[in-house]
Length: 247
Length: 251
Ligand SMILES: Nc1ncnc2c1ncn2[C@@H]1O[C@H](COP(=O)(O)OP(=O)(O)OP(=O)(O)O)[C@@H](O)[C@H]1O
Ligand SMILES: [Mg+2]
Image (tube, rainbow over all chains, first blue to last red):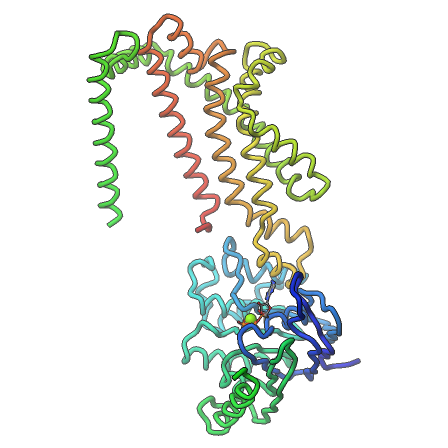
């Protein structure tokens, strides 16, 4: 049984578009590691996650995600929080678990500690309309993590939180991913976030886009975002990004 | 702030009402007697009809017809509207049929309705049904078939099946549109019952207007008209309250 997630030769063209957005995107994510995906806006990062999640049909290529015994194979954290406005936070979280087939009596134990771990225990009874953008994003992350996914896809999950909280959430995410040995693909615009969270960084670029650069980050967790080793890595990632950006 | 604007709005309403009443009274002085009765005369007639009890019984008669016709329209409109939205190509014919029937005003159905159901309640129920059904159907159909794609994508990404998605995502997402359709339907049911009663009934506010018209009692006609307006206003206010409770999450 393969334990890595294998992505091979993915191609996708939006209906009506002339050229594909992505063509020949290949990489592997070994079990329990986190891969960050960076690239300019509009390069196709969100599209790539949708292809991996099976929300869009790949035109060519394949996605192999290992099966999971006690959870779902893949869970997605969308770029917008995507909470259902007619449900409370609690109902949103329980709906996801219901859809995943978790029996009613077992659901609470799955989301409650996670919600508390991102500092939102008090919001369970609120509607999403009463949350700030950053709070809603955190609930979205909790929803995905509570499903115990084998592969977690995160699309700029901390885009709307302040830098201090962002650092806290990054370490909370790393802790949770390590504890559960969850494999993750994290899309981000933040080179420092990539350097703190990821074991490997991929840069998407070109037209149609594919993986144009790759960096390993072999630093032990937990990492201090302000340490010189992380800063050096962040600089290296920025260098790789700039190298492929159109002049 | 909002208290002050409320008070300002109330003052504006009162001012406009007063101006209209004074203009009306002035105009009535210059017109021949039955054409435009003065507001004071209408008020006198209203007091008389209220004391005598007919105003109340007429109102109840009209409301009961609305209740029956609207209930049937709501049940069928919701059911068939859902079928229209979820049936895809299979129910395209149903949607086309309603689209053709919808522009025909309820009054145009009165001749057939009287032939089919005679003069009486069933005929009025039918006219009310015709008035209320189309908006309920169309809004239900529209709201259900226009679920925001991002919610459907979320549901799919969570692995929710079609039933769970229908129950927890599509139906609640459609609720604001559906409820708005019911409210529009109720308003049209009320105007339709008056039309039906003008021609084919033995009681109700529409019938009363017609009776006063025959004997040229325009003050009685106007009492009926004002009463219809006020009843409609109250019904819509109540419907709005219910709407706010049912879909309190909507922006
Ligand atoms: N539904 C769609 N139909 C047609 N084209 C689309 C659609 N969604 C995205 N695109 C196009 O595909 C390209 C990639 O979009 P995508 O959302 O994947 O970019 P991204 O890398 O996630 O950008 P960002 O960093 O701004 O989130 C864009 O150029 C966009 O114009
Ligand atoms: Mg994106």
